[in-house]
Image 1 (cartoon, rainbow, N blue to C red):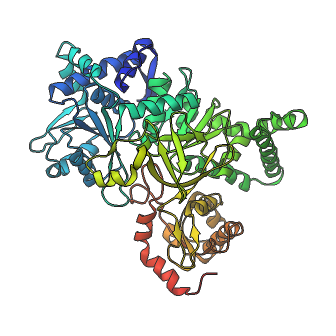
Image 2: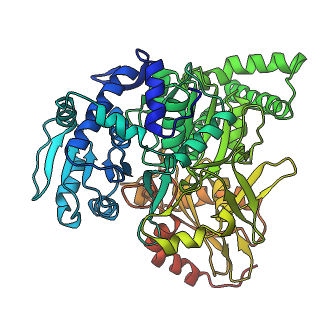
Image 3: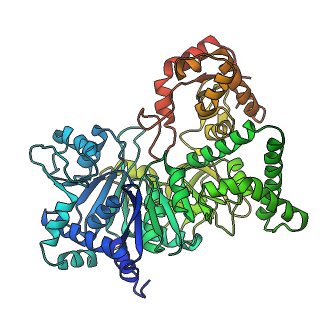
Length: 608
């Protein structure tokens, strides 16, 4: 970095582009091949697109909406918007037309970038609900449609408009005029209760978080990452974009899709991967399924390798490198078993980063046994987002690490985690009352999470404050803890615990169908679809065994007395999963309210 500290994200981008001109910056799949854009190419396109935005009337302080899946154009649109002195409001590509319209309307956006015909159609369909919108800029050429008062143009058209200006002097002036306290983005919450809220993050908020995170976890120009979490989410926006690219100068590959993620990772061989727990849970489940499906000598070999790996992991967690017989055993275990998992993940991983939701300690330890380190962190959109993170040289599984060095974190009397620092949001856009509820006296922000520090300063998250519930017997239950234990079982994919003001806990369970269907076929169970399969008595009996394993580790008031098997996975499409792959608990409970009531009505009895 230059001796004079840059004041904005586009200023940092320009510094890196000047240094790394011909170096590939980002890759995406084009006609089956990974195609790069260099730093110089991106800089030129950003400047032209920014000049185009200025030409169509975007002013400093305006907000521009951005509706797209992850792709290079997302980054181009973001940097162009910021370089024009405006802020942006990303919209998840999975959002409904009404949800898209809400963000455009609430943010008073005049311009909205949109990736595909499908996304443009969402905007055209709800044109009447977006009175400020004057321009839609489509990433792809040939997109059609019309709406009164709206100009539809392509990104190429916008860049050409900027190119025709003949000079980027106005863009240069806009970038020079951005201060750290100026608005960078509005990140809209998922809106599980009430309307979504626009989290106001400044350039200074994001830069402070990048600076501290870079000191906690070193990423450099030799690193490469695969981007697959939505860039609209604060975790990917900071860790997999601004931190990795602007601060570290690493190379980013945009994954084709989540289903192709493992294939893409095997192709590009990244050194660092940032993900939410759901991805690690799937890798863990597949590894354990391979163990369970193995027989004879192969099964014993895998179990032996796991035992050796776990022993080595414990030594390394204690700061000791195993030697002697243990080292020799591990070398053999890695060659025969764990190398396959490493190779599938590219073979070059330095570490994984996990955020967005709690990660099971068992999963982190199995990865570590395979010589794959998962560093769990913690934060919220309102904190830009990182508050704590484990480090490669200081980690503790089951915790979310230590506080980053420019943030303060304390535990309130009721156990709630409070944070203070330069990364805390300005507030919620146009929602002063909601802002006042979480922005407390003396600069403290109330996270809504419950946690505790251990004696070494590692933070452990107990649960979301709003998710904690009290049974009718007066006992508090932390549902995320129970759900994480259920996810470790062979036939359980997605659990949702219910029990607020009820006599006992029950669970809504989506089975792991990739394991259940082969089991059903092997056991002669006929079924026409998944909904019929989950009602079969033998399937219910099978899942009961998984639940019994978890119940064996729980206090009586936490134990799951009954469960309902669900034939359809929780997803973003059916409204039960957030873009960061967390289950929308309230939405699920509301949708299955009748079945839940029926279970309690049939089994009336007092809590134990």
